Length: 190
Image (cartoon, rainbow, N blue to C red; front, side, top):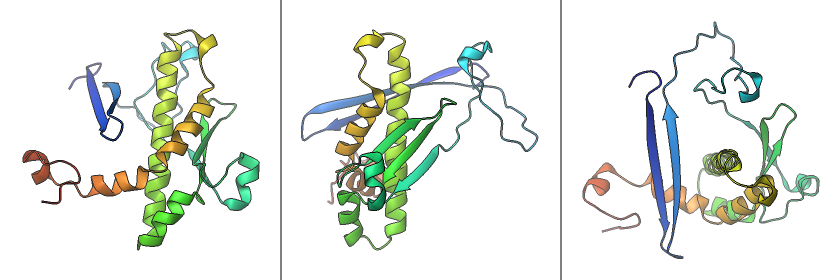
C-alpha cells in the first residue's frame, strides 16, 4: 500500500432474529508517518484551512464510568448504557453506566468481572464512535434540519445494544479460524 491509496472495508452483520442487515462501510486512506518527537500530536481540524485532512491516528477518547450514585446527573436508569457529551474542543467524553442491569447480570455468571466490564465499556464506546462518525458523514449529504440529535440517538441505540453486547463479545471470542474456513456458523457447537 502506498501513501494516498484508499481501501474500502464493508462489514455486514445480519440479525437473524429480526431479519435485518446492518452494514458499515469504512474508507481508509494511507497517510505519511508523522514524527512527534515523543509528544502527542494534535489533529488538524478540517475548518483550520489545513486541506481538511487529518493524520491517520486514533486516540482513546475520554471515558468516565458512572455508578448508580451518578445516574441522576446523567439522566441514567438501570437500562441506560452510554452517553456521549461533546466538549468545547469538539472531542467527546463518553459516560458509561457500569451499574447497567445487563452488565451486572452477566457479571454474576462471569469469573472475571473486570475483563467483562472492560469489554462492555470499550464495545459500547466503539459503537458510539461509529455512530458519531456516521453522523458526520451523513450530515454533509442530507438536510441537517431533519437530523435527530445524534447524542440522543447514540444513547437510544446503546441502550438497546447493552442487552446483547456481552453475549456477542463472548460468541466472537470463541470463533476459530477452523470454523471460518469450514463454513461453520457462529453458535454452532457441533
